[in-house]
Length: 358
Image (tube, rainbow, N blue to C red; front, side, top):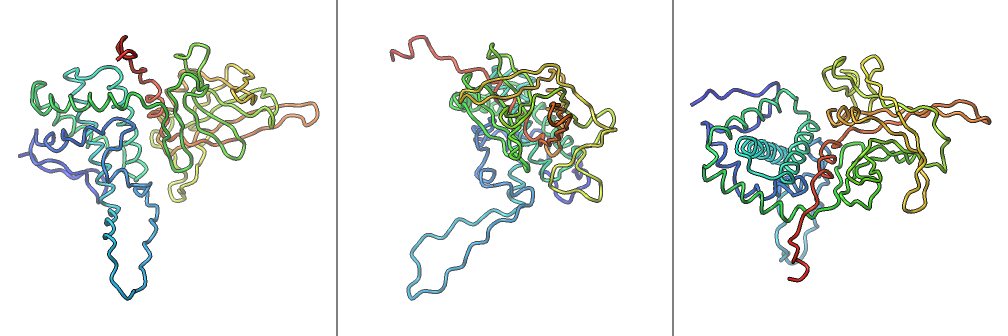
């Protein structure tokens, strides 16, 4: 029996099995019918409502005594913060374990694999929002994967679970739209080729957007920022600033002793600057006009690698004869951009040629 080692710097620990191989008994369980990116992983996770980041929950009002006792059924007890956090931990371990089994045994097709990757990224971000350290999360994931790797590909747990995942994916594959909520915003993701924006987040104050834009070839997505033409001048330059891991390894969430839940721009000295290489004017389906600023594919990868709590800064320079040069600075939350990007990359479902006549 291996020694149980505490995870790094936290009073809460991710539950771990006592012996190698035992992890897959609870992990590769019927709950895995819901481990795909958009599926609800468990009842506890479904009821989290951002509680794992410490948001206060509304208190139930105690009714006044009445002449007759109430015949209404007793309400379902709310899960505690610890219970809800444990549910997120469990989902993370489940997704890591089955992903490792797929890596070794080639269990799934492209769509199932992308959905699992999206779901793993999403729940990892939930743990980061709950202030789990990357070291702690990585250690737990490594152990879950090691346990999963200890079973042969023909083991009944792997065979049965992979079938459940494939069956669940058949229902999930038809999902077209998802929203990924963060602390300071959300990412909307659409797999419909009729939606110009595949993935985007918006700034309520300015109407600005940041995300992946579909081109004439719907399969090609470009990272773009956009401003409503009605309320903005034509940009002369635009740049995205985000933390550069080569200069600052840890996520930038503000000064060490002055962190707050609001977005904080990374220091310029530790930022990577990505310049827009192309400017366009685009008309949306509602005849709204956008001023587009397009960025490189390398910037997409950098954005996807950020901690979900970090800020991405859009700086726009404009110039007009009347007002002269001006600068606009907008902060977006990195959030679940990676998970949303994977969601829209899931291939469209295919149907038998005679499906329409059945």
